[in-house]
Length: 331
Image (cartoon, rainbow, N blue to C red; front, side):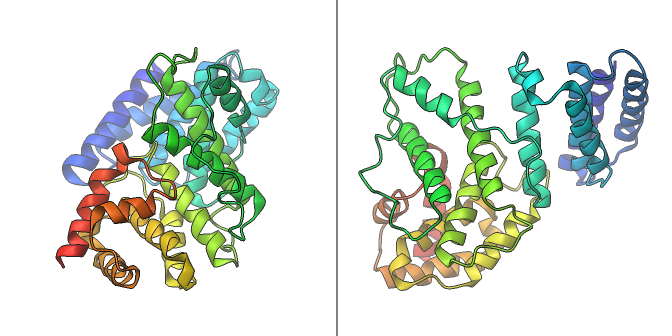
């Protein structure tokens, strides 16, 4: 019953958001109250640390984040303690779907509040091994030494190399037969996304000062923003706000990169255009317009060639990127 009440509360909240711009309808609050009562009862019984109870607490955290309630942090701390009492994340390996959902929620929480992840998970070595076992070279899109001389931290270089390999797989996918890798494709996708996001947040959480190196700061927030496009709604319909990402993007773009970093800046500006609505971000169009003149670029294919030197997935980002370029060039 708790899951039913939660689902009804979530639907009521999202309907209120999209229809009227509100998030706390009477129906949503009523269903949420019923959910809390049932969860409290479970916490006092034998199912206090069960998988289903963990799921319900995760649901409450999501609901309260949508409603912008600070009480989500209380439930989040409660979830951490429950997992500790269970013996840690390793005790949840028998339920991989629950683990992935928990990792995704953890990442969203960390990105929203600029904090570290509580449940760090990195399965990239498993992903690489799985792909190599079926004949897919994970680093096929990188030439020897590429992205290793950029004057950035070696951990961030390794993350960049992994993300570039992912974009190569998306932009030049192997045959459908080759991609039969045992796990559902969605699970593999989430393993990659959660692993890289955990590493990016561990490298530097967003509430900490940005890196002193301008190039490193640009790569870091650019990669975070790029990764969010793989699992977050990234248009005007995004329910939750992630101000820590927006603030870091603005701070990094406020500082000028060196003249020879034109490709990096162009990529970061177009990645930023995926995050902010261009209808209310005239400053962004102006920045790209100025850079276009400096780089002497006058058509979209040349722009795409430039930004594809860094993470960019054509099938996912092409439409928005082209629309932004049309605004830039027609102006």
